[in-house]
Each structure stands twice: as C-alpha cells, then as structure tokens.
Image 1 (cartoon, rainbow, N blue to C red):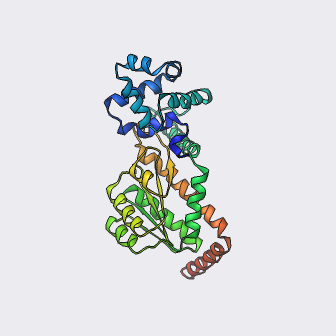
Image 2 (cartoon, helix red, strand yellow):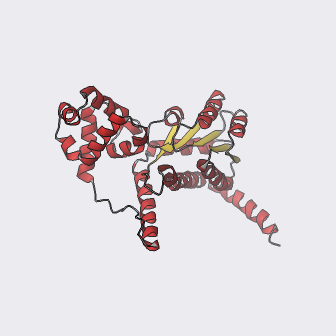
Image 3 (cartoon, helix red, strand yellow):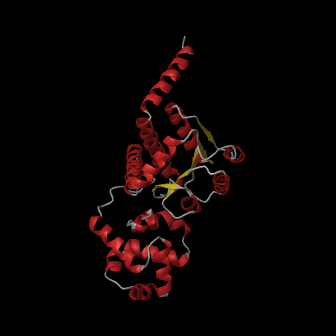
Length: 285
C-alpha cells in the first residue's frame, strides 16, 4: 500500500493545493471548511452545492490519491474524529518580537509533527537499507534544497561511507553518470517537479543507481519515479512559503537517515569520526 492509499485527506489537499485548477480549489475549500457536511453528504449533493459535475468531484478525489468519493469520505471522517484545535496562530504585523518568535517555533513544531504523521515505516527502512548497502552516496538539490544536500553530506561523511553533495545541475548529471548499482543518490526537491533534478534522476536510473527522493506529500514526478520516496508536510503562510517551512522537515529526515545508518554501521562510523577528530586537531596546534 502506497502513501497515497492511506488516510490524511486534509494533508493531501494542503500539499497539493497550489497545483489545483479553479474548480478543484472550490472543492478543496469546501472540504476544508465543511468536513462534517462532506461526511454526511453524497457525491451528488456535494456537486449540487458547489454547482459542479459529479465527475469533477470524483476526479478531484482521484487527484488527491483516493479510489473515489467514498474512500475520501472515510479518510476525512477519521480525521474529523481525531482532529484537535489548531493552536498555531497566524503572524500579524502588530505582533511583538517574542510573539512572532513563539509563532515561528510553533509552526516549526507543527511541520515536524505533520511530517512525522505521514512517515511510512517501510519506506524509511528501505531508504536506510539502500544507504547502508551503498559504496558511495551522493546528495542532489538545487537552490534551497542544495543547502539541505550540503548538510546531508556534512553528516554522512562521518559514517565512513564516501559521500558528496552537488547543487549545480551539470555537476549532478556528470557525477550521476559515473555511479553504479552499488551506489545511491538522494534527490531533494520540495515541489518534486524540478526539471534539473528529474533529468539527474533519469541519468542515475540509466546506470541502475538506487534512488531516494525527499519531497512534499503532493504527487509529483519525483515521488512517483524514485525507488523510495520520503515525504515532508508543511503549510504556507503569508510570511513563510511552504518550501521554506519544509526545510526543517527535510533536515530532520536527513538526521533520521543519518542516525539509522550510524547505528547500523557503528564501528565504521566510530573509526571515521576518530580519523576526522585527529585531522581537525592538527589545525588547532
């Protein structure tokens, strides 16, 4: 069962909202604002209320990963039952500095909690297996995701597994062309639709390289084409784009992968860290 065969109706809508067409946004808004009405309404009643065709509502349910309206309604019902009040208020221009800081921290906490809620244990294990079996690991990301790739390299160099990070698209493709099925690549893209990243993915796959993607929950070419997809979940606000908020979750996913790999390769990691400390200590003499 894939990530999109499970629940999390509201999360899926939030993750894909920016990609919806006008009528899809009308349906999405109605579901988010009136979930109880959806639960107690048929597809024809919803279509009449929104002045759209039943087929449009059905296609929307398929668009966010459900088999149909009934499956979406069941998932939504489980969320409504377990829903809690959102304590994370929006930032206002007249907020003082401490209030803004508190709201930013709470938003970050929410992003991490939401990302944890969509984590697939089987996918995480598959990703760790790939990394532990790799002779070399490379991390690719462009723009803000490039910073995450660099952070991943900074962590994984401690594991003793040779690693590298590239944020230049040409270098990504050149390096990927030199890898083999014994290596691994991690591609980071919030949208999952970055053309350069997808081209690099294609090069890696042509050489049989196992691939891991870190992206948003929304269905995307990256999430559908990599061997293992790990998802982040974040909400866009007036002062922070969804892509910016997701970086904390991306960093945390990288942390989780690093710690898992370090535990499995404890002796190799300890030897590597010892060598690094000895090398760095020379610069302090």
